[in-house]
Length: 167
Length: 102
Image (tube, rainbow over all chains, first blue to last red; front, side, top):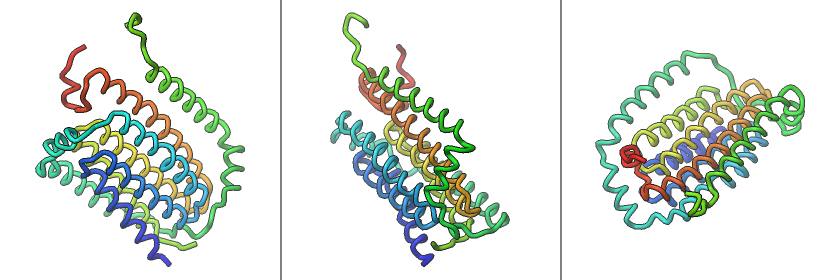
């Protein structure tokens, strides 16, 4: 049964690689949604069904849809794809690729040396998460609400139309 | 359900995070940079969930909820800024935008 985790992990990594190398913005967003769904499946496998549901509903369902709307509004057409083709040469990937590969090796070494344990043995159901959110983490929930309010006001202010005489 | 060693879960989180980092460093289009940032935030959330599942505690999912909230607020404001930048500069090229004045 552990094979399901590894299959979902490979799908997530492959989809993410396609996202960062894609020329077309809408295609990249669709592959990003696939990567998010694979990660949600991993959450479910690890015994976190509430987080899996939230990932699908909020991340893949709201944030990515927001991205798709903005990409559609910007209406980046064929000339943008040609522009991206021009910007992305193969030698651009060498620098960040090598540095990230070194980081990966280093972190893998630390992981292998580090502590062990099995993840996913216990299913943490939503009731426990809810009890903890209303109990010890109440202040953090209020702060998150304030953050969302700030984001809402900021997005509204940035998105409103300015009259010509105000400029 | 199934149990996997915590190293494998954290390795996946690291791999996804580094892929997002490469995306931010290489791409010039602002929209793709924002997408890569979302990949990085998602990878960090995955690390928290894996850690919470290892101890069987609810704190992993709680922190994931807060990361999700933060990602949502950041995506909303970032996309509004991208729309404004496109209206003003006519391009989403990160290099061109830094050279223009006023």
